Length: 287
Length: 137
Image (cartoon, rainbow over all chains, first blue to last red; front, side):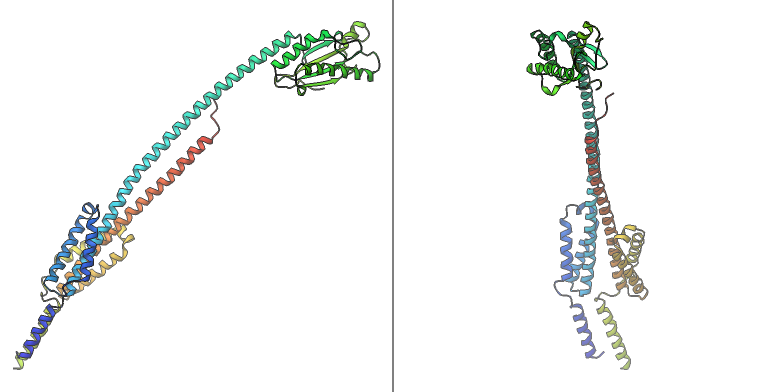
């Protein structure tokens, strides 16, 4: 072997074995990845194997650098270290997601429990409310019944009679001045009592109907009957009954209750009738 | 003299071969590394999650293993070992990314389920409150 060849071999060996630099970027990048991974709290559990492998490859890379092995060798170790670190990162993410799943399932239970508790509370509240409403209805029904009984008793006390138009109180002819619409003083007491009744039973309305006998013209009788009805109406209003609860109408001679042939009959026909509504203000029928 | 020159040239090429592969020689056949890579790739191939979430990594592993097989066949054992090692870490990475992808998907599902549950529960409560009262017996 000549010296030229020997020199060539020596140079090749020396330069070939000395191409690796003191530091390697790829290895440093991989080292940084491994550092980041090792700082993840979950890495110790979830990525232990990948972390171990990554560190092993880093060591191999450091060793190759130290031995001044070619760049390709160091870069290969860097690649292995880096990919192992990335696998470790993925394992950490998996562990984080699993923790989320567990937390989410707990929360699902909590939501269901809470929702059931709410439904129970609402159902209970509704039952209570329904019970209260039932009690209130019952009380109202009882109160209405009592009120009705009271009203009927009071009307009976007033000497009102039951007819197909409702309860009717008749003010006789003697309560009025003869042939006039003015009320005599003697009418005061019955009118006081009617006003008191109206006050006690604020939902009751009255229709006051004036009637006459057949003496004289029907036109005259119409006017007289109207005036007498209005007289009675005014008397009640004076005693505090609101006008809105009173209707006054004259029926003239058209509705006799007795025969106009006799004096007694004619006196009976000359009357003012107070027709009472029911406890809700409704009359039996209008005619 | 001619014979020695021949020998010297051969020696240069032989050394060049040593130098190119890092002055360490070819080393033994990388049976263990190739087996490991093959096992990992096979397992990851069956992993639907790896296919779904890390197809590129898995493909790379396959390509590297193919290179390893070729190098191994050509007697380039150092190169084969390197390719096999790369194939292993990439197959492992594909598996890890697949698992992470699947877990994230499941976590999202649970959270969406809870969001639906929350709003349904709220609606049910509102309906109950607004519903007409139960008639008393």
